[in-house]
Each structure stands twice: as C-alpha cells, then as structure tokens.
Amino acid sequence: MKENIHPDYREVVFLDMSSDTKFIIRSTIQTKEKISLDGKDYPLVKLEVTADSHPFYTGKHKIVDTAGRVEKFRQKFGTRGSKTQAAGG
Image (cartoon, rainbow, N blue to C red; front, top):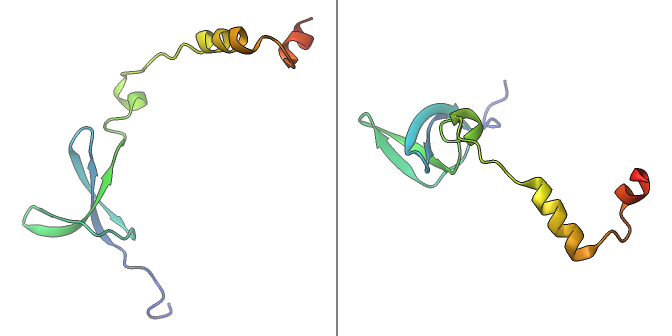
C-alpha cells in the first residue's frame, strides 16, 4: 500500500443523544470532540438516532395518519389536476 494516502482508521465512540448509549466502532470519521471512556481517550461522534433508539428497532412505532393528510390536501386544493380523479373514473 502507498504511504500517507489512507485516512486514520481508529476506534471512535458514537453517542446516541436520545438514549445516552455509547458504543465503540472503528471509523475514519473526523471529529473535534473527545471523550474519556474506560480510562482511554477516544474521538466522539454524537448521533440523534441509532438502532438503540430508532422506533423501528425499539418497537415504539408512531402511526402516521396519511389518509387524513390526503383528505386535508384535497379539501384545500380540490381535485384540480389530480391524476387519481382521472384514473378512478
């Protein structure tokens, strides 16, 4: 391999901000923040959502009322230029 062309591949701490979960993974991501964990300093990456806090993986799904959104849109704009009107028939 060529010298001095590869990014620094090292252990990095990823912090899930919503569940305060920390995990260490090797990465080349560049960070400005650092954290001390188990007596060792690591670069820190803060994330809003990870598998630990994502609704799909935790089973806490939000049900979105898409039919209500469509009806609200149709009340506001009518059926002008609607392809569903022509297709439905």
